[in-house]
Amino acid sequence: MMNKPISDKDYFNRQVKMFKALGHPNRLGIINILRDGEHCVYYIKSHLGLDQAYCSQQLAILRKVGLVKSHRDGQNVIYKVVDPRLYVVANIIEDLAKL
Image (cartoon, rainbow, N blue to C red; front, top):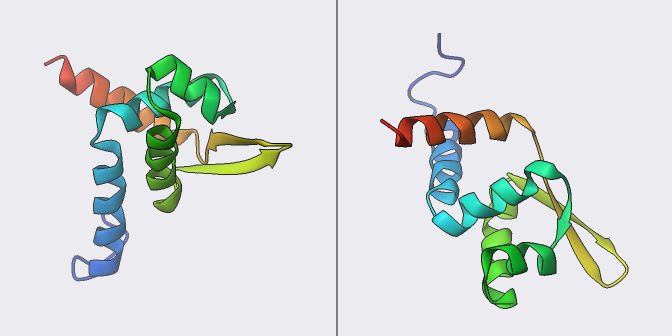
């Protein structure tokens, strides 16, 4: 059962933006790193082997679509997933990729 009428373009556009944000290997890697809690950019970039500026750009994309949020802790910016249901979606995508 659909909650929104099929003509609600804004509703579907928001969904498309989220899927696009998840459609990048480094952003999926970031989501996986955040499974065990909040982390700073340095921790995330170190685990993915990314440049800090590039990692920050990827986090900004995830933040812009509302999948992660951040807060400051001194000089560090700490990121976390907004809603843990995102991991359900990530798990489904992972299972589908095994087909």
